[in-house]
Image (cartoon, rainbow, N blue to C red; front, side):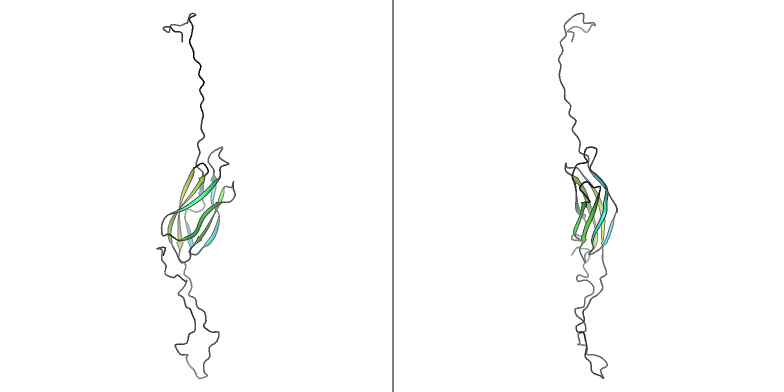
Length: 185
């Protein structure tokens, strides 16, 4: 400041200046992880126990500098009948891998359509969610029986056996829970 009216040059007048230091800190922003699913929908028979490798792929941990973040998947059913699965989880194929496998166990004799949220979480709170429609299909289980005896005795002139003779027991119509519907019962 030349202390005057602003007429240049200062012509030897004193100047008052103040020096100040300014620090600017640019904090990193945690970018959300991401992934793709190998199937847009999933159909499986009831009672299925399966591992599907590379079910999630192209897994990223965010942007440059975030490669070391640990990731984990969570799953949650958002609609449809409850109780269709004993287990429905995704696991990274390796700690730094870019694929994940799905391990699932569908309960026998239960079927219906559900929507699952599959979320990839990083250790700094970032996340990315994909919805997956899943249909658990009913299986037509064959009827079953066991012979009551390994042999039947009949007289030489017998043309038929009495109706009270038990040939097979127990007889099922197919599956121990045949008739359970998609109500999740």
